[in-house]
Image 1 (cartoon, rainbow, N blue to C red):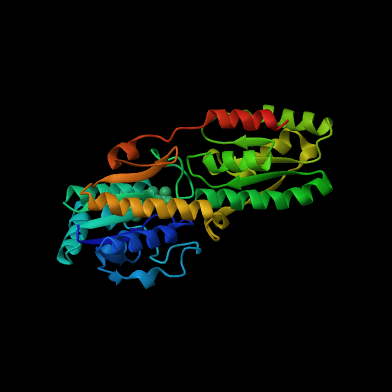
Image 2: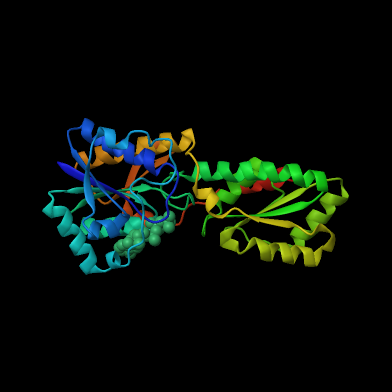
Length: 320
Ligand code: ATP
């Protein structure tokens, strides 16, 4: 490859900027021209493409969001849209594309690679719902945001002997709830991967309160439903607990990326560039047990992420 482009797509996540920076600087280091595509696949179809140099990615490693912006683009789901995108890249002599995003964005990259553009995917989502990587870019920062919020809730809850229901993001993946739950000492973690019984949850809360516990935190992953509904159901079963509900929402997608996310993004961005130089294509880059890996996008997209049951059981044992 001689010229490559980079875009961010789908939901934004902290660390996308660090990945863009790594791609741009690594490519230039290897003598390759780099182009930025503004607003994801929509920007590609609008030919919103500009040349990037070393300085264009200065002062962004610490910023949340994405300087390239993101968008959803229905037209790109059609064959005509994909052909138009490939043609626009070819006209500019761009033969490689790095896509930072989630599952949907990966599928777009796979379609382009079938049309002759070499593509690499980087896992950019707070949800940690992508297989063949232990972590996605943004997940660690999102978990930090949740833990920080729960620390604050604990202060006020202990003072009033209250319980809190905290609804967190993650779509169909419970990882944000699980990791933040273990780290913040949540009493109950409700996630889509593990069936639960609200009668048991309410009974346990009652017993714990009777045994002197002064506060309790229930984390609800959005994949199991709304925090408000869980709180209502618990109150019905055990009226004296009257939990307060906090929905953290998009705050979880903001803030400066943690050093972990910055370093993950930097390693993955550089790796994707090197893979394109080697002539590889249609791969999703990730880190497994500390090692950089590139896996066929089709395989990644159709494999459900492993769930860490051991960690869930540990959280349960420690939350008496
Ligand atoms: P997140 O998980 O953070 O929401 P995502 O990448 O899964 O990220 P999507 O909205 O699913 O987010 O996808 C982003 C864009 O990728 C879509 O707007 C569309 O342009 C493109 N895309 C999604 N699915 C496909 C597909 N099957 N074929 C081609 N392009 C697709």
